[in-house]
Length: 143
Image (cartoon, rainbow, N blue to C red; front, side, top):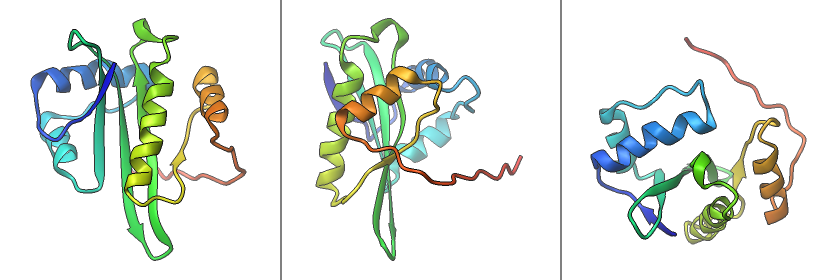
């Protein structure tokens, strides 16, 4: 498996996103082509795919960054491994890659969230070294 940063739009990658994203969040709003193109050209969003030697896209992840007065914030979002490819270590490879890449951006820490129902994913994050911390996370729905 190879992990590649994607900077330019392609139908192949876009179709993979539309296929993979509902596997991690069945209620996710799927991005339009224009929205996805904006993600790929953003300086604060880093989008990656996991690809087999036969060019099959089997996973993806996004790293977001934000510079604020207290320092650079980095978080990992939308980590997905295709259901048919799970259990092969691809998720671990994606997360380890994200950790190394985030370090190259100057991050001192990396945040991520995962629903409690994603038992295998949560176990993986903890095994890799992510620490769960107590916080109050709030969400205000605008629509």
